[in-house]
Amino acid sequence: MAIRCFVLDDEPLATDLLKDYIGRLPDLDLVGVSNSPTQALRMLQQTPVDVLFLDIQMPRLTGFDLLRPLGYRPKVIFTTAFREYALDSYEFDVLDFLVKPISFERFLQSVGKIYRFLPAISPIPDTPEPAKVGKEYQYFKVNKEMVKLFLEDILWIEGLKDYVRIHTVSGTLVSYLRISYLEEKLPPDRFARIHKSFIVALDHIQAVSATYIRISNEEIPIGRIYKAKLEEVLQRE
Image (cartoon, rainbow, N blue to C red):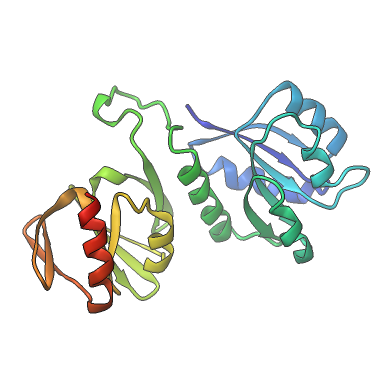
C-alpha cells in the first residue's frame, strides 16, 4: 500500500515542484493537488490522505485554518517562505517544516520522517515476500537513488563525517547522512550508539566484552562515554 499524499499551495510553481519530487519516489501516491484552499478542504474531507504537503499563507484560508475543520489529522509537512510560522505549526500533528525554496535533498529528509512515523505502510511487492510483511524499513540516499532497507537487515552503522557506511546482511552501502541524525531516527529498542562512530543493531549482537561488541564475527569498539548507557540497554534486553 502506497503512502497517499496531497499537495496544497496557492502558487502553481510550488505545486509543480512538489509533484515532480513526489513522482520520483515509487512509494508515494499523489492523490490530489490544488491551488485553492477551499477546494482542497472539500477534496480532503471526501478523500482522506496519509500525508499533506501544506502551504501556510494562502488567500481566504491559511494552512492552520484548513486543518481545524478537516475532521481528521493527516501527517502534515508545512511548506512556506515564512520562517516565523515554525513555532505555531507545532500546535498540529506536524511532521516537518520546509522553508521555500525547497531542495530535493531537504524534501528527502521529510520523506524519511514519513517512513519513520508510518512504518506499517509498505509498497506491494512484485512477488510475495512473506518474511518481510509488516516489517519496518527506512529509505537511504545512495548516489542518486533512494534505497529501501529493512531495519532487521541492518547489522551496524559506521560514521564517516558527513556520510555513514551501513553494514547489512547482504553487504554494505554508503549514504549521505550524519550518524547523529540516524541515532535520533532509529528505534532505540532496536539500535544503540556504542561509540562516536558506531551504531549497532541489538538483535545481531553475538557477544559483548569490556571493550567491544561482536557482530557477524566483527569486533566493534565500545566508546568509554557510551559504556554506561549501553549496559542499561543490554540489561533491558
